[in-house]
Amino acid sequence: MIVTEVVCNLHDADPAEREALAGLHHEKVTLSSAELTKRVQRLETDHGRSFGLRLAGGSSDLRDGDVLIREEGNVVVVSVLPTDVLVIAPRSVAEALFVAHSLGNRHLQAQFFGAESEYAAEVMVVQYDHTVVTFLEDHGVAFARQERVMPVPFRHAEHTH
Image 1 (cartoon, rainbow, N blue to C red):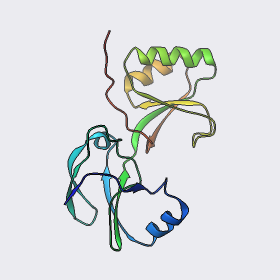
Image 2 (image 1 turned 135 degrees about the vertical axis):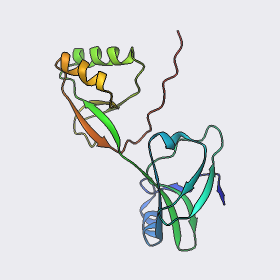
Image 3 (image 1 turned 60 degrees about the vertical axis):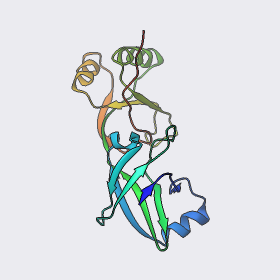
């Protein structure tokens, strides 16, 4: 079997659809953040079932909760492994700009979250890197190292001058 599109996402489904999906047997495909960006790959569920994935170019990256297969009584759902990240919480706009500029010069991918997010604060999240830890410590910037399932995978930054 080759999957060519995502059926739906458990987190985005309307209540009726979510209830219908909850009544089915769930198999999981566990992926790292890096694997979420791959359009073509061979996958295996936690029940040992193998299948191919071939998404069209321009398709969205896979996300936690994506339903890849829905069939009679069964669904196959993407489960994302946590990523080792640094959650950076600047204390001022000036500090936020300084950190963003400095880390941007390193071409690090960052994700930004507001106070209404699960972080309950305005934060910048980057993949763990020991040199970033040293930079943040040297400049007295508040941060925490955490394992998080990120809503969007980190991608290698394209770069031109």
